[in-house]
Image: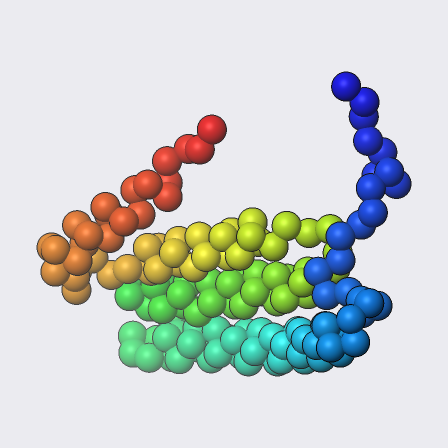
Length: 148
């Protein structure tokens, strides 16, 4: 069996700006610009999310009793911080769409799993009904099992 060097195979380009068909070429360039806009927009979302996280933390600190954080306060701050991390992951996914030779399905699935993990981490089990908690466990359990 022969080994292929990276130069042996032509690189696959998702949105080829030099496609032979004029309509496809124009569509690819338009989509490319849309993805670039989404990338810039995600930077704005991330910055606002960071400000929101800082504001949430500040409000929780100055609410009586001052400088004392309870579990619900920590959950609110962690939730806001996890939103920032997920926004950064989405930004990474959007910017990686601009590059060739990337398997996008893995990126999207990884981001979705992080979003599910955020939901599970920030669940307040005291305010949940038993059926909701049970359904969440059944839904998340297969995601936590090792794949191999």
